[in-house]
Length: 157
Image (cartoon, rainbow, N blue to C red):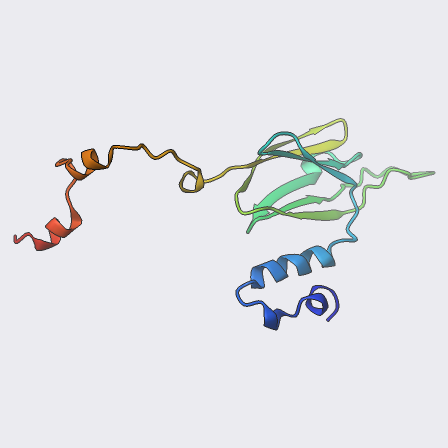
């Protein structure tokens, strides 16, 4: 197999399977270029994906997020027109984007033939930095409103 495995043999890296799978996925889909798209960083934690989908209506587009993969599909419904020249492509497409672990899709809109998908990186509360008050250890230690787990185990019913 060529690509990532030839550069970095998996036998040398234990526990990095998910990273190799991501790199393999990116390598396989590197040539996907329809529909044309932009990925913008609009703030510290905000992103925007724009897809040029001229000729598609809202009903012909679908957006789904599953297992950290954002999938945008388009299937044009023929209106029975006879074209002399067709320069605007309305071929069926399926475009995927891998999302980071904490990236959430906040919404989408179709304006002037551009499908915009709003994304936000949301750090979970337990991963956010928090300030630790200095000098409050004794207050917590002497607080009788909190029951000690050891005390519960030693109590008799």
